[in-house]
Image 1: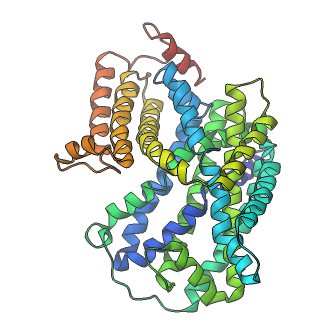
Image 2: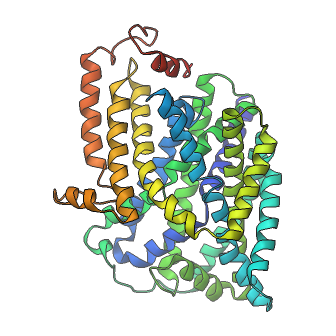
Image 3: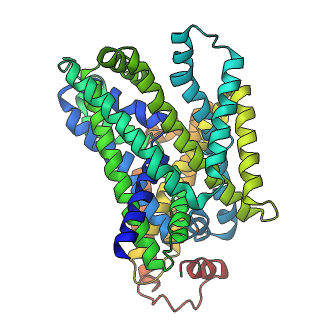
Length: 457
């Protein structure tokens, strides 16, 4: 039985790797390798810290509630528990991330193959690609209990083999190209790597994919809270190891590839063509399609599960079909307008979600249950995230004011203030007895907090 559970957790971990590893994750690391010179090791360590370990912590945090981001958000308050999950699911679901997988797979995979074959590449080609792409993604997402088998046993091994072939061929094809480090990679390589890993924004996806992992493990027979936490943590570690290994290999590829160091796509295409010839174009296309398809499957299934919970009169199948239809329409209409909206929203959401993940992990280790440590830091993260979002839309007055402190930037300027407030809020919870209060004692706790606590058990 233990061996069976380990195999299921391993398969689920491979599935989780594929869900995280989209086309953006494929493109970032080669650019790091080509741009960081002798500091590549330090840069990759920083990238892994925020691009791998942070999402892993997000998956583990989600497993403590058993309800994904719904359970986490309710710990802040009932209204927050309704609004945050909806905005997160929409922004990395049918309104942006899902249609983006179809567009990216077309631009990086299907279009080059059509050009190689001398075939037209206009709007009709994109439409046909999108229809086929979402038909396959929808078909594979309709049974969430089978995702681990379909992705973890088939798509992920194929993806890993193709990436290994591409990286090995590129690394053996020629020596490391001597390029000096550029920009921030010269002065602060670790900070640059941390920032690039942060900008993958995979911690947002972790709150969505975490519930997919929980659902999968429950379908495989893991039922108790302890089993779910163990299984989710194990799957997360396996996914993290795969991600770290792939990121390191792709960074090495970037060091050997001839192309624009700032353009990961050009580096990958050059590496594929120089090492494998015309076959390299096909291999690269397959890697992109499998990466995008796996992510789309996970996002469609995640949205359908969430929407079915929020609006139970519409079943899972109908929600998945509706999500795919909206994504298909946006793919063919173009995403330029949505990007203008989604980019500021993401800058708002990311500090909130990361803060919620960190506080949840602290709360899981606390003897009692926290209150102010949820509400105050998350509220501050929301305010500072709103400052970054406003600057992204063109209104930079609040950001300019904070920049006068010398410790603010629109990407990670929120981190230090929130860390300080988390520490102060823990002090308040300790002073009011919440840190040491037994978990069974919920006297004098507001109803919404009591319900959130109950949802953990």
